[in-house]
Amino acid sequence: MSIEVWLAFVAAATAMLVIPGPTILLVLGQSLGGGRRSTLPLVAGVAAGDFLAMSLSLAGLGALLAASATAYTVLKWCGAAYLIWLGIRMWRAPVEGAPAPLPPRRAGLQAFLVTATNPKGIAFFVAFVPQFLDATRPFLPQAVLLVITFVTLGATNALCYALLAGRLSGAIRRPGPRRVLNRTGGSLLIGAGLATALLGRRA
View (cartoon, one colour):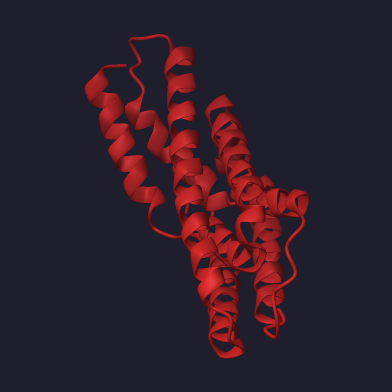
């Protein structure tokens, strides 16, 4: 893979990552509640989820999901239900006093599940990554480079959002603003879940 192709991949992946999706909405919401204590587990969960989804996609799972209506539908509905459940929890989160910190292990697990089970992300890997692979060169070194690059970019992006939310968490102490944030984030997560449920097989 030439340096020009790799830089093009970096630019395209960065442009895709900076647009907040379900994973970033989750990171923002839980960083506001848990503060800096939950930052590293959240980032680790995002990195692990991206690594699993992209690696399995390159290994052939993406082609299987694209060919199997049942496999795609099961994954889609599981991911949609999980996002909606998280959105409802965020909507109903208490706003009086300091929010209870999210246990680090649970924070990382939730970030991992949302990232790894997002069928739109898997479809993106299947359609997007092959454009940057050179068929005349060995597949494995290129795949490893692209996975490492994307996971690093995704983790860095999640870290930036988490740190920003952590700073806002200290500034937002009144119930009113926290209620607005909880309900906005919860509504967006629920909307993301519904959108995932309505995705077509080839989305």
